[in-house]
Length: 338
Image (cartoon, rainbow, N blue to C red; front, side):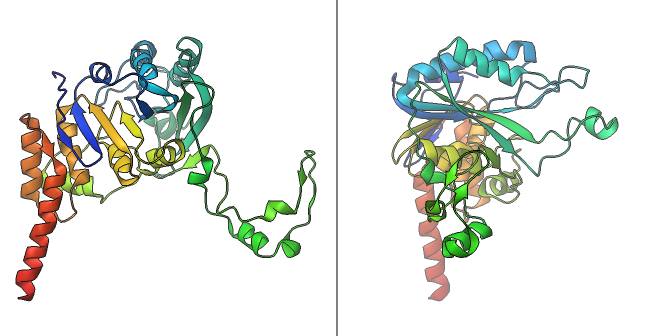
């Protein structure tokens, strides 16, 4: 597929482009991006519809993209990458490809590992089938590694933007510290005083992110179903990019996804008031991803029209159709109540 530098579609805050991310990254100004967050095709043994490389080729391939990302990031920018686990071919032993990527990003490219995160997906099906379901040799693989890299040792971050809800016990402690807590020195040597019971608006989140990936009726899937379009088979949940976009960027910062798929990142960035750019090499995935930015009441005919026009190379302003849908609905309501 030939890379297109004109957006396939754009919104008030961002643009989706079709093509090879290496070519598209080159069009961005150096030092202009606040956050690159992505989930690339994983180095799996079983080939997927969206394309994936053999594990021995994977690390070199990914580092080609990472070199370009490093140039485009601001000095306080971040690069967040979600990698799924994999096994070595034909044996119940784990591949280390995701760890090799992390080590080479640091040792060869000069990135800094700000923190390692682990995404636990409780809704993930048991896999791999051979070692888990059939032979019963391994536990279900339900953790993805999510590496947070900084261009420097000091990437911009604010953990107070992603505080977790307090537990019921902590709520009781804050309400009446004297009843539920006695300040003391812990066995570890930490002196936990009465200030521990202060209400900070939420708890500091851990680096284990429990997020179910079980969307079944969102706008994107509804649009795919209404138009008979096959949805992207490996979407990550909106809560994953939301966490990092909120923590690592401010309003109007630029967020880029270099393997956008169904463009969950763009949708979240738009909702969070960030500018965004998404790159995806498969035109059908890009065309269908515009459904995310339409009103829930958009007609199947409209969605099918936009999908087809994007595939034909027309650049679409999705905002125009979102506004028109709302005008049509108001007109229908006026006629109904007349």
